[in-house]
Amino acid sequence: AYRLNGKTIMRMRPAGRTKQVTPAQKQNREDFAHVMRYMQNFKQIINSGFYDVTRGRFAYHSAFSANLKAYKEAGRPTGLEWLKLSEGKREGAENLQVAALEKEKFSITWGNPANVKGRYNGSDRAFAVAVNSTSKYHYVSQNQTAVRNQGEAVIDVQQFSPGDEIHFFIFFQDVEGSFHKKNPRNVSSSQWVGKVVIPK
Image (tube, rainbow, N blue to C red; front, side, top):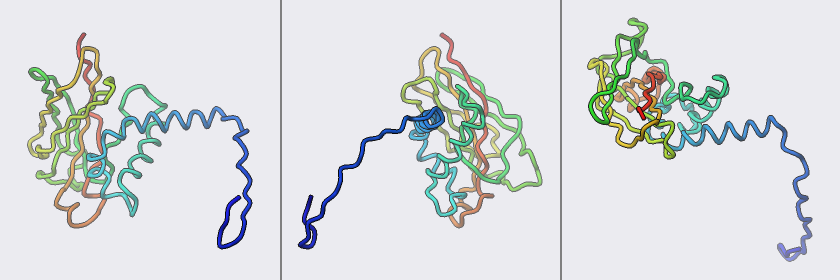
């Protein structure tokens, strides 16, 4: 009971939860938690990668919805091939490859756009990203200095241990175009390049 505007108000205590959690509800909660574990590490990247397709929503919310859907549609795999760091209609690239260089450095290379008549430019910024899916902290390393015409980006992955699984991604963006006006054609959907398992 409490007083409000000179009147005594009586409220009943809410009843305890009686319904059992269904298997579907439990699976949805597990899916949510699994995707969230990774998404929390990509906020800065996602803000760029989903900025042009938010349609009035925050980029992070759009990205989480897209990733939760992608994870389920992929059959809930143990790897990260389902992960989406960006979404858009700009052209990606073909012939994606990853190779280990000296020490902690890795090289991502790419070829021409899949559709040479699509929207792209040689000066597009290439966002190359490495994600450690094994590490407790899911270490993220990125290179934002490369451009499409270079055909290569080198990433320095400093935190890994023998047995860790490193996944590599790339997407392209017309940074100046995004600065002036939101448009899905300013950014490509991210592409999974491949993975490297650190030898034990």
